[in-house]
Length: 171
Image (cartoon, rainbow, N blue to C red; front, side):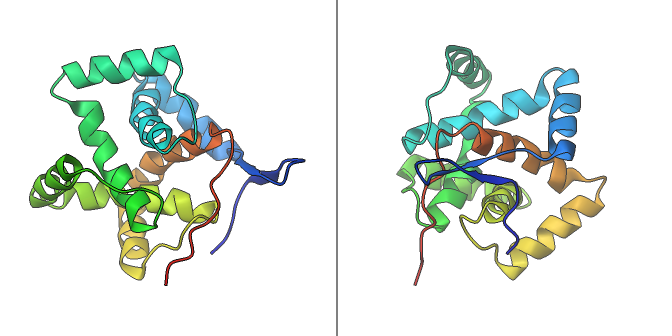
């Protein structure tokens, strides 16, 4: 597992810094109606529920607005919460489990949404992606870089955490 773009702070905690390419693509995607920012909002919500960060008032406002439109921010948060729970950071609610199952019925949408999240977490040393997740990430990247483009807002959300959590050692 290659740990990328981590800075150790004086207190020993670690923070994530985006690579030049990730900064470029995050900015580029925001030119298109703020798509990367809006995707990041649901990621930040998942991290704030873990107590790892505070959402800004703008992020809270956009999370509410996106949920008014058919719950899209909540639905986008579900695969993130699944990825975090699989590596031991969070427990899902029964509603999140329900929506994850419903989204997986739709051609595995929730699973494929979880794959870039796990890749971002593995790049900063918080978990290991399974071989199946690694395979699907590469396949997603072969489709015009779709996996990478979805991973960038995940890394941006991780870079906005006040500190990274300690890696969870799973048996």
